[in-house]
Amino acid sequence: MARIGVLTGGGDCPGLNAVIRAVVRKGVNVHGHAIVGYHDGWRGPLVNRFSHLTPDNTSGILHRGGTILGSSRTNPFKEPDGVERIKANLAAERIEALIAIGGEDTLGVADKLGQEGINVVGVPKTIDNDLAATDFTFGFHTAVQICTDAIDRLHTTAESHNRVMVVEVMGRHAGWIATYAGIAGGADAILIPERPFDIEEVCRHIRHRHSRGRTFSIVVVAEGATPVDDGGAIREGGTDEFGHVRLGGIGVTLEREIEQRTGYETRATILGHIQRGGSPTAYDRVLATRFGIAAIDAADDGDYGKMVALRGERIERVPLGEAVAQLKTLDPALYETAEVFFG
Ligand code: F6P
Image (tube, rainbow, N blue to C red; front, side, top):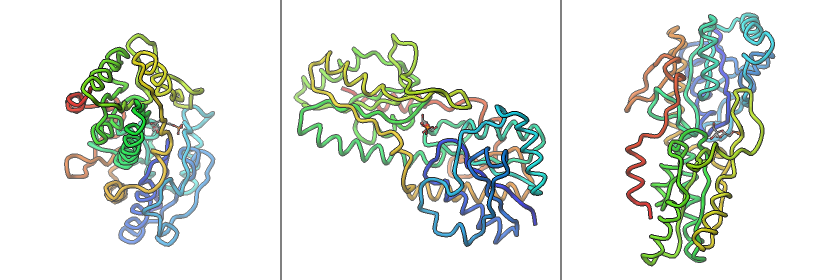
């Protein structure tokens, strides 16, 4: 029997509780381990805040959004003696291994702590789906479904009022959500961080569509998309401990520009954190459960420094370093598929 820690870091994401439940259920009932849940991401092991997780107190959480452990964007490498404090706290609690559920930042820390001698296993989480070495992260499917439902709703009101609707979705560095939801929702233009856009070209698509008798258009834009003639994405606030700026507002700029240039009445909707809230889809519940089981199995095997990953239909273990080396940007072929339907 070993004591295994688990934490959830970074932006929350539907399916986190499903991973925690799976780790606990198999960890306790099958492997006979004790599971310690650290609170609020890396802040938990840093300040030694945790609770004991059991099959009983993690029952009934499979379908619940958010994370029962809380989350934060705390970066221990930015805290005084952060690494030493984490090592001391884990040693005091006799934690054999730590399962970190997170995206590029949380798993980047896990990778570096692994190199410092801490036993870590990673689970890939982000609605953005921009983590390398896995085909999909859990949470992405749910976010895409939420965006698609929103686009469907915007369609009917756009049609009634002959309007252009701009829908701003999440996606700091990658256009996965925008492109998937745009294809699923029948978008007339999709703007993503990987491809700076020309506002005149966007307007051309809209004018062309309207010249064919259509009276409304849908434009999906990722929050990190930028115009070709501009320096950077539109910021809403300061930076977090990993140096990320808070994005948001490109949709409103587009609303103004499109209306001025085309003369068509335009409205913007920023979906924001609605994309991260609420219940995971069935697909994400299953993926998150498989990841949780695979992670506790890796910890039980002592196969540390790995991230569990979806490769095709299978869950595999890949080096954490491979997952955080670089972001997984959108597959250009997928964008080409979407483009066929523009304008
Ligand atoms: O990393 C996931 C994500 O949802 C991004 O798409 C978005 O830019 C960011 O988190 C928002 O972060 P916060 O919840 O801290 O505002």
